[in-house]
Length: 349
Image 1 (tube, rainbow, N blue to C red):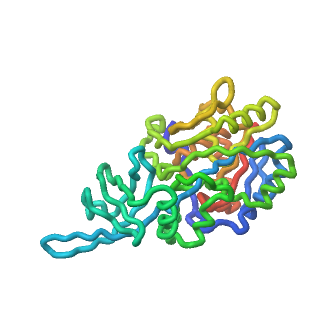
Image 2: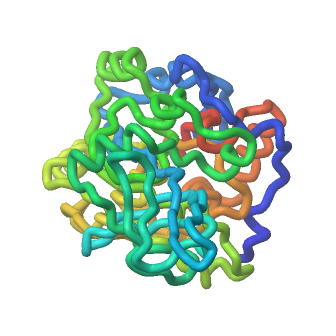
Image 3: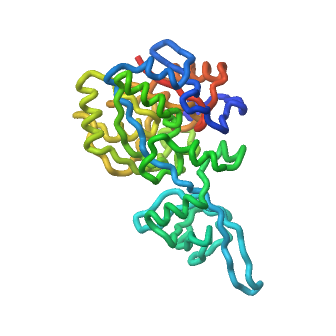
């Protein structure tokens, strides 16, 4: 398939820069068989059945954007440079892969100071990135980062406004637990306590998996033949308990519905012909039309970027023509798009 098969024209004013408040007041387009229904996230219990299992990603977004200074002594005396850092992912050796701007302003061995408590040494530079080793680890690192870091808003929001204090709550799920993501599992941002209570009252159950969403989720597809695109890898875990709950739901004839493409990609990575197996590893699964879904019976997700891998995923899930009709409807009805935008509930035939 060609990249152009997943393109569409989106009016600029439909890109959301703030979420709905309260969270569950976001609009929700229900695609159920041949029907398209304009609803709200708080209507979700009406379209789920007792025994349905929602799979939730409990990753926690870290405030991964930092501003610091690099000081240097040289022939010109003492000089200082302002350095912008976006953390990408932790490495096995304890360093962090990071985007550093301007990268040409730092050298290996130099230190970037972000606050009196937090600094990092540049250990290596390659392919437009740097490896940083921070002076703190564990809870001390998390606390210092929380004081000075900003939430890593997606590029299409960051281009319109800077991150602020509101984003530290807005860009975090209600159940966020395991720190490590640099992008939110945004379909989950529509859930709040009243909606979760209503779902429980309906007889819907929940299980949690972890996929640390990486900055690679925003990388554009640069090849026209989509089969040649290489996916970024993201670390995930499906516990033995979560796998057992998913398998028991399927065996009982109920539906498994991941909340977000991250949860879907993870459980399909862990799928076998005998059910979902425990998983603790990176996944670079690339889901395009023709993929055989072995676990997901439905999907709750936001509206995605044109020509993105996530557009390919929902096209695989619902069918290319069906997704095109769903997105045409969403644009005509002025649904809000992307990370802070509205939701869709996709229930294929």
